[in-house]
Structure formats: C-alpha cells, structure tokens
Image (cartoon, rainbow, N blue to C red; front, top):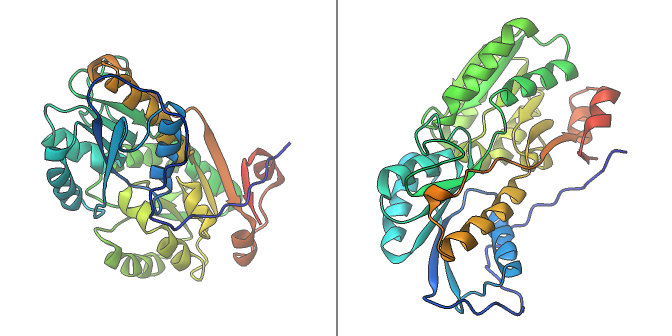
Length: 324
C-alpha cells in the first residue's frame, strides 16, 4: 500500500537541545564542527536528535559548532579554514564539502555525508577500508541511479526527446552522474543538453538556454548549489512546462515534479553513529563507509496537474511520498 506524506520544510535556524538524561562519557568534551548542506537547519537538527539518543548533551559532553557555507568550493574551503582550528572532528555534507575537507584537513577526523562517489574522487581508498582520516556515508547506492531518474522521466513523458541536465561544473559528482545519464540516453531515444551553473545568479539564464534549445524536460544533478536553490529551480521549471526530476524529495516538496534518492535526513541521522564511534576511540580509517539504507520515490501531483500530465498508475503505486 502506498504511503502518503505531506512534506513541510522547517525554516528555523535555532539549535535547540531537548531535556534528556545524557551519558557521562569520561575524558575531554569533543568539539564537533558541522558544515551543513541541507535546507535550512533541518539536517543539523536531525543529527542533533540522533546524538541526543546516544546520550550526548550540548556543552556537557559535546559541543557542536556550526558554520554556514556558500555553495561554491571556495566558500566551503573558507568555512573549513575558519572552523578547523577550534574543533576536534569535522562533519561535512555533500561532495563539494568532502573534496574541500580532503584538501584542507590532514590530521583531524572527518565524517562526510551524502558524497556521490567517495572512492572514485579520492576521498577514501575503498568503502570497506577507507584509510586516512575520512569516512562517512555515500549519496548514491549505485552508479546507475541517474539512469533510473532518466527512465522515470521517460515513463512520465513517453514522447520526450530533449532533456536538459542542470549541474554545477565545480562539483566532482557531475562526472559520474553524466556518465550514467549518457549511458542510458541512447536506449531511451533521448538527447541530453548539459546546462552548467556556477552560482544562483546563473539559474534564470540557464532556463532561458533550455527554452532556446527546446528542452522538453529537466534532470537536476544533486549538489550543494542545486539543493540550496531548489525552490528557484522548481519555480522556473513550472511556468516553462518542464517536467523535472531531482535527487531530493525536498525539491519535490517545493514544486519539482519527481525525485528518486536517499532520505537526506536519514543520512544525517546515520552520521551520529560515526561521531559516537570516533569519540569512543575508533579511527576513521577503521570505519567502513556506509551507503544509504533507503531510497525514496517522491511525486508532486499538484505539479503534474499544472503541467497537464497524468502520472502512470504504476509510478504512483511505487511512490513512497505523494504530495497533493
């Protein structure tokens, strides 16, 4: 039976710690730096809840130090440089964050969250034996995920031929996403049109380029820049009648048509276990990289109606999240 969820994004930036009975770990109080990549502070709040469940209390046996970042690589690097002298452990979200941490943090432990291809881009030696000072959680459970997203678009719009691919060229994840898309496109009768954006100010012009190129649908490659600008992307796709497929259900809640990807909040909750193990003495090189435990298919029926589309019953039957 299909589970229906109605998604609401939280906008508060206040870090609140509920009252709970924390464990009394011996030794020093760890200072954990967090570079958040999620919508608002929701991902950080999910991490805090999981740490609370493990017995950690802010300013008692742990101190969480959050730093805001700009979406680009330089902005993330600046944030890391500003926070790293004052922390014992760094948590970074997204591929750009992982790449920046690999470059700048050599001795302190790093836990990455939602990185597309950590072995291929050189963050770890292997998933089972990371080596070095980094470990964490991947974003994709398999390299074929982008091909599946393209197949979903074709299922929704069988006559689609030209699909724009919105991406941030500075994100190391793009190479592997494009390889997956390019491998699937010929068999689906689809021509891909890669559209790069380097900042949020490029997005409007990117949609103009899609119109000029007569794109009929849109794939958005996951990354810090596209996640942060999910609302703008959804808002621009709808009046241009572009069915859009995303990696984050959060963007579908903002008005995107469909998404296939891991539960982003679950990935951040998952990271609490790494923090706990490292504080207790484990080394990142000894902790295998984990993969998402659950993938979700999300659809927005309101957006489908606005686009004049009727979603296939087979797709609706598979959907985990249906927004009406």
